[in-house]
Image (cartoon, rainbow, N blue to C red; front, top):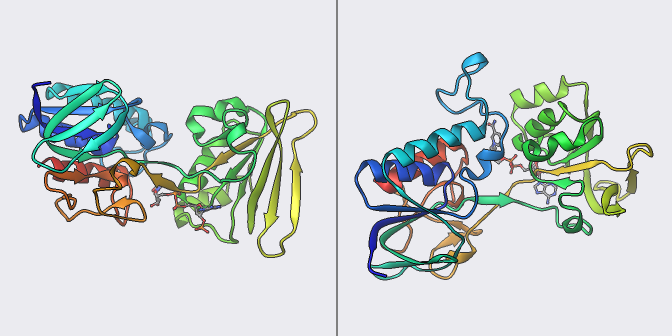
Length: 307
Ligand code: NAP
């Protein structure tokens, strides 16, 4: 291996892509590594209402996937090299950073960590076995499989409530199961959900167990957190199954960096120029400890980190 890049960016969500755009435009010799499709969380989001310039009405950006496709094209335009690979290990201390991937080792003078976050699972019995068989973490990916079926959405934040509304396009009925008696989602999103007559609410409730029948999700035990009462909810007999969509927050993809990078609750700590505690290593986007995780703040982080 002889080449040493100026910069390696890990992750091609909005933060990594924006870092790529700024680095490429500044003529840094840059490698952008991503293990899956570009976009991270936003690529699986149906509506982008709050990205500046995204507009609403006929001129709106149609979806997260469309916004990401535009960012990807812009990064390519500025000559950033791409590698599709899983990063398995990093050596970040010292002037030359080494990033180990399943496609070999790459070296650089600086690294931007933009590896984002993944959906938090419920963590109850039955969940892992039923992923893709009734349990999902992505409404835009899986919503259409639940045409005219019943669906439960777990969580009470912006994501849960927005995705519940999206799921009403397909499902016969959508029940939001929330552990409190009040939504966390902002007022404007709440109001739209309350006005949607396909949406019902199951308050003060958490999922205790998911049950499969013939390998598909057919029942669920929920607990009322105030009374302790357990209720088993069965799929309608004619349907034989229902859907459970889980939107209870995200966990940072930061395991690879835990030994050397300073973190709080597994989120990377940076200064306002996105520097971590290790010289030449920066972090951007959802993996960072920050007050607001949105596309616009991820892009902002990426730009600052690259500069
Ligand atoms: P969030 O705001 O952290 O909400 C997570 C929800 O899941 C909360 O209602 C929480 O309940 C519940 N929850 C957490 N752990 C749970 C558990 N173990 N069991 C059951 N319920 C659990 O996450 P988010 O909705 O994904 O949003 C993340 C960020 O993105 C937020 O800053 C949000 O504003 C932003 N966002 C914005 C938009 C938009 O502006 N259009 C859309 C999507 C997301 P409690 O309420 O009781 O804590």
